Image (cartoon, rainbow, N blue to C red; front, side):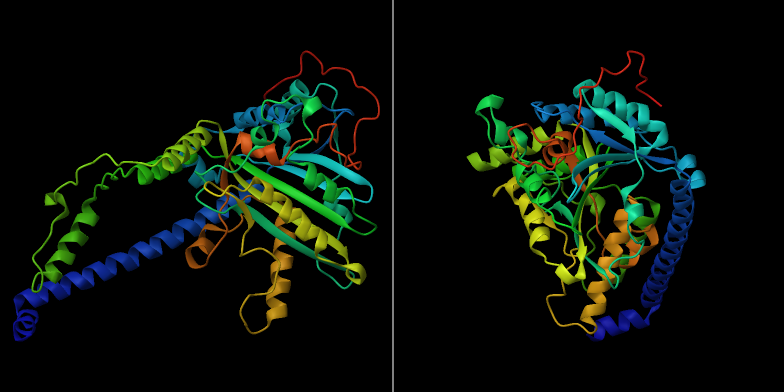
Length: 437
């Protein structure tokens, strides 16, 4: 102890103290710079997003539909054409450019089930071409946004809501159960289980004043799913990650850190540390199957995705049973060893589990926030500055097969009767329909 006191009181101690002050000043300056960068990025990105002209398209599928959900998978694959393949830095920081997004929506009331796509007006030809190619008898019309028939702020004195954002419960690299599991190799005549049948049944039984909205916001994910899959596969197989190289400032911090510990611990410089050997890991059959499933998911195009559910009813007759039935319908996609969908604890509109002051106000705030997020259809759930200081919701990474599983028109075997469909057969789309905006 005397040695440590003498060391800190001598020239070496002054060097260490100066180093600590320098490191503290560096991190304080870095925090300020990051805060200013995020504030600026928020300003320009919100301005860019507000200038995008959106169009609401209602999709009316033909009756006696027997098209396999694979068709909707192909549609989502075509939507991937909106990807920028990397926004240029000057476009991002000066203009606030963000990736394009699409909102695929399925809503219901006593009048039936309806499908919508909300998209940048410039991308309308892409959406129409993709849908007509897979569902030739479909009718696509520009529609008034249905949320305009509702108050801009709910709950209010007459109406109440429940809502939740459905996310993948584990790392997004793990796949959930998808439509091939339900259909297998069987033919339509032999198949009685459509993965969307349970949800469609719940949505087709709503009574007067009841409304259920399901929104799937998607934006191209680039290489994010592949990178997540590589990490998961590496972890399961026991592969060591390559250490990240430190820059000049990182090296300076490492030096000061080691110098500060020098009186009590021999310095360990990262550059001289021995690189651990990669030894093959003996994996079980289950681990091999998980790796195959993770790799298969990453082999398909992927989007960042948010699945949002809103249930609205008058306060006099409000019950949570239909909302719970809708969220429970997503449990059929759960797998024990891979992934599952669940309501996110930050956004589901239930009272806090533990006692907190103003429980009713906390719940009311959550309801108003998720309702606002739904009607805005904004993929920027939180600002960059907000993300620095509080917990926030992150979108899941879902590939086109997973998206097609939870959003597709029911096949004719589904007994739900409320689907809004084309009354008469429509002609084929024009041969010169453009596929890019």
